[in-house]
Image (cartoon, rainbow, N blue to C red):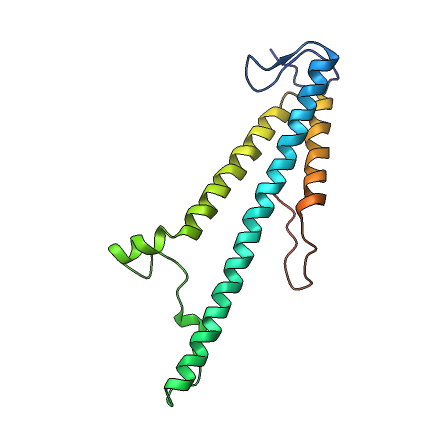
Length: 164
C-alpha cells in the first residue's frame, strides 16, 4: 500500500503496476516523463484558449459585417442588438439544423482538446497522489515551464485564469 504522507523514496508505483521505480535512474526518468506530461497539459490548454480567442474574434467580425450589411440594406433598422443573437447551438434550433450547429469543425476540435486537457489533468492528479516529493516537484516545475512557454500576456480587460 502506498504511503499517504510526503516521502522521498526511490521505490514507487506510479499510476499503474508496470510503471514502477526502484533506482535513482528510474525515478529520474519518471520525473522527466511527468515533467513533459505537465508541459503537454499546458500546451493543450493554451492551444484550446488560442482557438477560442480566434473564434471569438471571427464571430465578432461577422457581427460587425452583418450589422453593416443590415444598416446599408434597410432604413428601418439602425443596429442589431446582441440579445437577438443566440450563441447556443442547441437551444435556438431544432432537428437537423441543431445537429448541424452542434457538429461544427470548431466544436469538434474544441471538444477533442478539452478531452485531452481533462485526461492529462486527472492523470497528473493521480500521479501526484503517490505523495512522492520528487514526482510532485516534476509536476509543479512542468506546469510552470509550460505556462512560461505557452501562455500569452493577458490583456488588461481580460480575466486572468487561476485554475485548471
